Amino acid sequence: MANEVLVLDAIDAYYGDSHVLHGVTFALGEARLLGLLGRNGAGKSTCMNVAMGVLAPRHGNVRVAGADMTGHPPEAVAAAGVALVPQGRRIFKSLSVRENLLVAARPSQDKSAKAEWNFDRIYQAFPRLHERQHQIAGLLSGGEQQMLAIGRALMANPRVLLMDEPSEGLAPQIVAEVMATIRRLKEEGLSIVLVEQNAKLVFDIADDIVILNSGHVAMAGKAAELRTRSAELHQHLGVY
Ligand SMILES: Nc1ncnc2c1ncn2[C@@H]1O[C@H](COP(=O)(O)OP(=O)(O)O)[C@@H](O)[C@H]1O
Ligand SMILES: [Mg+2]
Image 1 (cartoon, rainbow, N blue to C red):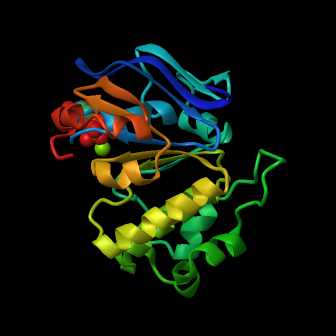
Image 2: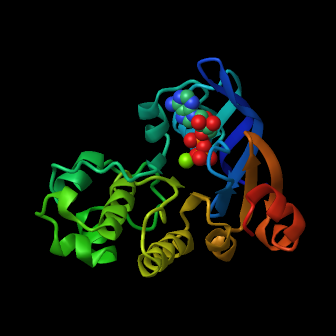
């Protein structure tokens, strides 16, 4: 694949003695959206932890835009242009909306970037955050907190955005709004890994799909090709 912006190459990862990822390999291409699917406990968040440098793999490599980032700390991975919207959002609930955005702000590394993310652009993209910029973040609705978590990641001006189950716990209409936001970010050229349990959501917007089962890559390929393999999808995802 041309211009791989994030590569997990033959990753083995453990929590203590517990072997969670087994030779996991996938690559995110520039300006593409990769859907990472799998049942609860399949290892999706662990892949995000490895990509972000939160968990060092025991074997294998992590590369960001060609640079070996294996074992580098999260600050270094962030400086290389990767931002994570964590599962469960993890916004700073006692800080205001604006303060949440401010703590993540980082100038763009990529001089060719069309437009830098700053307060004005975030508030334009998420008018509700503008209206509520001085409110304590813990008082926002679930959907607003998710928008804030996305806005906060964008303030770091990443070239790679990792999103871990952004639809989790949100009402269907809010999920649709979040997905529309993700689609817009992709159209603007951001490279995105979208982690989901809900396969239907992901097949609608992903270019590429990776399906994990018990820490192994069970299926991988272009979304258009994988979506036709319904028996296998059912086997690995249960619901499709
Ligand atoms: N901090 C941790 N310590 C020990 N085991 C963990 C930890 N986090 C996750 N696990 C285990 O690792 C496996 C993969 O978890 P995770 O990556 O969170 O899956 P997913 O995000 O696909 O639901 C699960 O069996 C889970 O119980
Ligand atoms: Mg998870």
